[in-house]
Length: 330
Picture: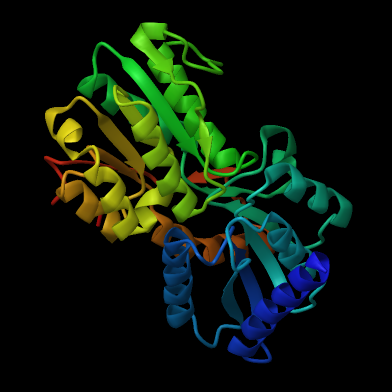
């Protein structure tokens, strides 16, 4: 039943996409982890800007993904369907489950260019895609750690909140955070290095669900009243601003005094409002709009056989409570 439902939803989504392009247009498809994530809507806006600037040129940027970010199978099905469509000229994928997506690409052996966007395949499977466009996720994790080191120079107890277990981009951020705090590459767990210790039960995995992310935070704060730092390696909890406000209300005094530090990924408008309100200390932001805007042009370069770098980074924005009004790159 689930397989039938996934197939139906994927077909419906692709049908809507097909209806949005003229008959002569070739599709430059962007497949994200889930349409329920506001981060990916910024990629869509970039995709649509590209369409507005390139109307009538024979190509259309098509944005799709499963309804839920937790639906790994749904994303696989959508990519599988796109690879069989004659009107699809290239695909950019943000793989929710990198090993599963790599398995599909090995089985399908696509004849059209395939790239990754926002999230990459694992290092062992990088040859399956032509290029990766997005954030240097390890560096993003390093930036989290650098800000933590400034705010908590003696270290402390810490909890990392991640997304899906097999999401390569989030795992890379966690590695950057741990390695930098520990001062050593390949740190699997913080167990006292430079004063930093991960508490029992962490890391937490949200499966990219905002409600679960907020519940995890609330439970962690209740069970660990002396926690020194909480790192949202992605912005999931903050994507539900009202729930996030309620969760941080219970630790607002600790945050104001600097006893508890919260650093988080992404700089969407609700997140910047949270930063201004003192509900986080640092936001390290990606540039999803730029990803969506640049991806169709990169796909066209691949189609035309032009030289494309194997990795294209889109940069980061580092925002603190002191720089919140000026930190976003224009």
